[in-house]
Every structure is written in structure tokens, then in C-alpha cells.
Image (cartoon, rainbow, N blue to C red):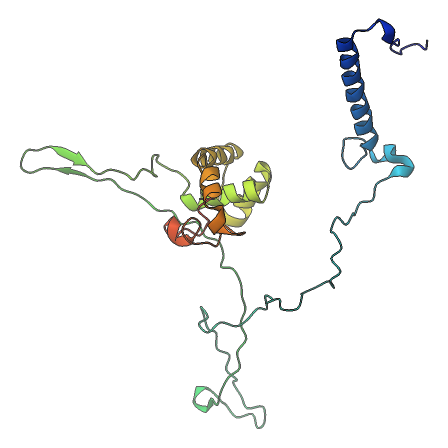
Length: 249
């Protein structure tokens, strides 16, 4: 017997239950060895040098062949950027002198125009809304009565619903880690959100979503493949005009 190897049991001395237990243990051992054989630098913490000649390809195409050509398919609507009829700002560019004789020209000589449109995102700007609860003293009895803050404003300072919706969406749906998400919020929006606050936002939303799986299953026949665009359960109207889907805000 080699040193370090488990001695082979005498099968003739084992009961039926002991044999079954031995078979189960051997099957588990085989599965573990097969799993180890599949480990490499791309799916474990092993260094690339340990791959040897069995170095896995960095790019693997997991798409199944459909027989269709690549690119847009016949009948596909496409997403061509089209000009809009009512742009936000309009910037006029007038010629100052005639290219033929050099005389001055302006608005009075206009004969027509061409237009080009630029689609862009406005600079993100944080809006701070202050809530004030006033106290009033009754002239009849002298009692002081104070106004009541909304339920969503429990502290002296807090993040609004849109900030929370964006944080949960980027973390839970786009899978951005908390530390990188905190950097993104600060760099793009100028909002300093601690990683601990991001975690609290996700936990709070998770508690609010406890009943959603049942609702979605009960309405799956009418929601179709895209729950974000259907009316009733996931539309902007059902979320008080919020810019985020009701499942995120």
C-alpha cells in the first residue's frame, strides 16, 4: 500500500448499508475531482501560468447559429436618430456678409434655412427641496399647533425618491458594486452617497418588494415579455410621474 492512500475496504465484510454509503462517498469524490480538473485561471483564483498548454480561450462565442445574416433583419424597425418637430433651444446662425459682393446681410434678407439637431443630455443638477412645518397660535384659546411633515421626510436631511431609485437600479440591475456606485454618483451627479447608505437603500427596497413575485406571477399572462412598458403595473402613470419604473423606485 502506498503511503498516504486510504486502505481499500474488504467489500465482503461490508453490509448493504455500508456499501451504499461507500458508493455515495466515492461519487462525491469523483464529482470533486472532475470539478478540480475544470478549474483554470478564468474560473478560479489559479494563476494564468498554471494553465499550461490547456489555456482557455479568452473569447468564446456562446451564441447558437440561427442561419441568419448578422446585422439588422428584414422588417426590423431600426433605431435611426430622427429630428424632432419641437426642439428645446433653437440657435440661429446668420451670415454677416454676402459671399458674392461682401455687402452686409442679416435677418431682413432671409430666404430660408436648413436645420441640424444635436441630441444630448442636460448637465445633471441636484435640486434641494426644503420642507417647512410652521407653528401657529390660536387667537381663541392660545394653543400652539404645528404643521406635519410628509412621511417621506422623516429627518433633517435625506435623499429623495429619485436618488434612491437610481441607486437601486444601478446596483441591482446593472450590477455596479457599492464602492464604484458611490464614485459614479459623486462624479456624475455631485451626490455624495456613502456605501453604507447604498446598502440601506437596497435593503429597504427589498422589504418593499416582498409581495411583488406573487403579483407578477398572477399577472404574467397579461404583462408579456416586457413588464416595464405595460400599463397598470409598470407605467409612469402608476408611479406618480416618477422617471423610474415602479419596481425600482
